[in-house]
Image (cartoon, rainbow, N blue to C red; front, side, top):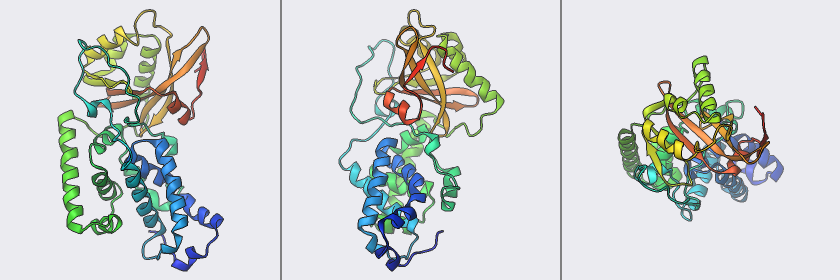
Length: 341
């Protein structure tokens, strides 16, 4: 834990020095706010609001807890205030029942109700802040985020603080202004709901923590399947019960054969060879790609970020977040020329 800071040290501090004290905590607070609100870009704004609120109320810091704990308290309350005014963010798989090929593909739902991926290059490391060594065991996978956002905001905060950040129950109670029994009860309900979801959807916290030769080969085959519009090659990489979705389209599909038939009539329909280009990236500690669609003879435009969930060497889920704005947020180009790697 960091050293406590006497109240006077913050009361009389200048804004520049204060900002320098807070800056090492920015990345981990960004992740915390992302878990709370489900949008990396919104979370960035909320971290900024956290720092502004900390500056305005610096005189209330008493030094009985670490500066980091004080900032987490502010950030959590900033997020809870924001969530009072915002809809819950979900994925298609947590929003509605599985779709079938007999149903028409529904129109997009373009309200801010969809979870977004988080760029791995914005995750904190122990170099950013010695107190953030917990990062290696943090949960941030797409499946975990989807389950987390089934919870009410206060339950979500309690579960994150207790089970992800490893705070003590009495610390959580103090932060949220709740009784110890209320925290324990809410945590039990949150754990029960997440366990029920994981069992119903057979989700596992599987992520690519190291890109060994076998995984690299699988990912290369995946890219080749998309760029050559090879449906059979894509299907060979999928689990039998794999899932597929493309928010903001609200429908989602389950099963290798269903996904093959869907892609044949949509994204790989017609003369599709060369229609797509993929650039590798990382999101939520999982393999991901910037996805680009051909817009002319020599140009591809950003289409979205595609995140893969792996399970025992096979692809268990493909979620394509159809937003060019996200591609830019992942520091990928908005356009590609033909032949770009």
